[in-house]
Length: 236
Image (cartoon, rainbow, N blue to C red; front, top):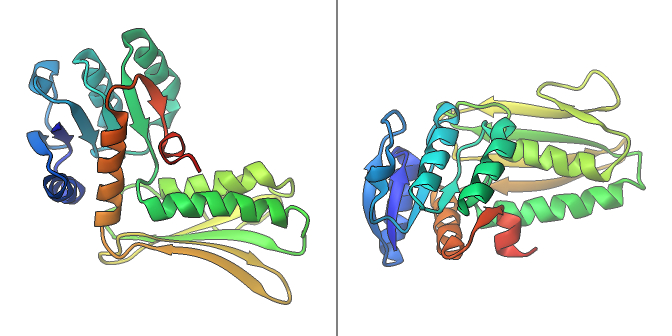
């Protein structure tokens, strides 16, 4: 495939390396701050977008207008998802978006929901989430932490919202965000009781796992139309 990389920071470079390993070609590299025109995407089979929240929707709509399916790893734009869904349907375009493209994290998302279903019956356990990332990460909590929180909230009735600090009310779910050095991403879900603690942990060793998942998603998206997530791709 000929791939357009929209956002060419550390993740963009990691994605490029994986693309080359898998026999693909990068036909366009665009920095997060550069303007993107539909004509720039000529010859691209798919775009992979890892830029900034304020630019993501413009990039997505430009890909749609160019007839190029797009895989999006940027988070923080989901309030505009209805607009993007409508544009995808109108232009018969394709989008796959995710808060995290690591296959391992997707497994954790799946197990997190299953564990929460069990814990719904065990109200002596109180859930909480911690996420640790590098100091350059812009959003807090991470999109991955929010997805974990939403998975828990969907499955238990004793919590109805998350907060990005220690919970002050019993119905709140704690998310703690830490920013340290070059940490690529660590997420931990804990269920604490007076007697013991149960933990579900994903610790990324590097960025390659995220890049590989994004490239595999781009391969899968070829020839499709509509809006998809990693759940559609992996079929967990």
